[in-house]
Amino acid sequence: MAFKNYLMRVIDAVLPDPGQPVREAAFREAYGETIDADEDQWRRLTGDSTRDLSPMTQAKMQKIAHYLWEQNLLANRLIELPVAYLLAEGVKLTVKDEENQKTLDRFWKDPINEMALKLPKKVREMAIFGEQVWPAFVNEHDGMVRLGYLDPALIATVVKDPDNPEQTIGIVAMKNKKGVARRYRAIINGPEDVFTARTQAIRESFTDGDAFYFPINDLSSGTRGRSDLLSQADWMDGYDQFLWGELSRYDLLRSFLWDVTLKGASPDEVKTRSREISAPKPASVRVHNDSETWQDVTPDLKAVDTEAGARLFRNHVLGGATMPEHWFGGGGDVNRAVGAEMSEPTIKMYAMRQQYWKHILESLGRYVLLKAHQKAGQGEIDWSDPAWTVQAVFPELAAKDTTKYAAALQQVVVACVQAIMEKLMSRDYAVRLIGAVATRLGVDADPEKELAAAEEEAAKSAERDVFETPPAAA
Image (cartoon, rainbow, N blue to C red; front, side, top):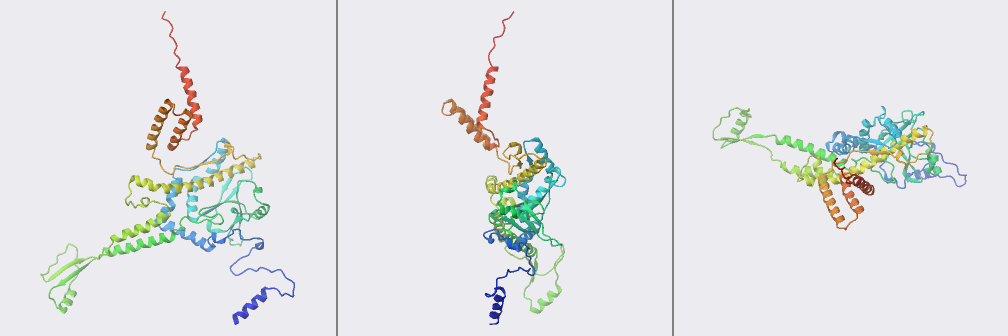
């Protein structure tokens, strides 16, 4: 009854008296929570908040992922292997126009940007934390772009377009010691009129500069990225604990004791002998009669059973990360041929991540060219023009076995020549068929252009081979 009375008093305090005019309710700051002055003008921008982790869970995920990367060998391998495959031989941005290439090179090699040095860190931290924020600083005179860094742990909110939940429009950082929260406007390589008037007004409130925001493992209606280690974190920790337990057990396996049997001895004689006896030192001599037997006893803890358990737990984690067992030192029954086939799903996953980083770097490159172009006071950029088409060149993910494709190319060429001679195939179709096989060797060519070039060379060769009658001997 006391609680009911308390609840009624709360309701009376909140709801207005029907006989009194309605007054505007005022928001007050609750202990431990902050409400912005314009909080009433905002609404949750995603239709379903369960698409995101809670802020506390997001922060915990990032701390755990960082800890596992540092302390857990399996977790470190799951992060470092993709970084090595993506970046081991280096990455570069290219464009066909020479002046634009100079602009990109200047950005890439700038002593603050140092992309060749910092890119592996960015790729690694993207996988660990699930997101990256890079504030961009543009030189007012020449449009030179330099990148900053905002730790993912300092992200308070990622704001989405209220008219399009897939599009990020701003990033709000956590408040600093002075109680100020920096608000960054998310960078897009396009004009502001791609947004609705309402969204443009919201973006104008982000006045602390522009920043790139890139998440991974996110959903269309979500706002934050997720770590590559999120789903495997508990299993990797359990695998770690399992191995530490096995380490303790192997300490016990190295233990042994001497079992001494006294034949026909009374209990008092056994007690007397136990006080006199001591474990022999190495290379010492032990003398006794046939009524006393010594035997070393070691524990039998069935250690062979743990190998299957360790493999089960390890493969559960590796399978979740699409990594074959033999990439983590477990050979199993894998031979060279089977190992190559088992690696294909992993390479496909790395190829997807490579495409995402290709998009990120090409977006950076377009932004660099855009800012330099704007400071030069020139017109709009046609991004379909090859002179402005930025390409991020990555190393090959895996060395191709070209022997089988080379053999197939030879067979296809012979078959095409025979089919043309028998008038069963046109030259155009034959060249396209040969080109299809050649692409497996990494050759990218236009079959029509190659056929035209071949016919032109054949015609020139025929002109040079015309027989000329030698002059008569004098």
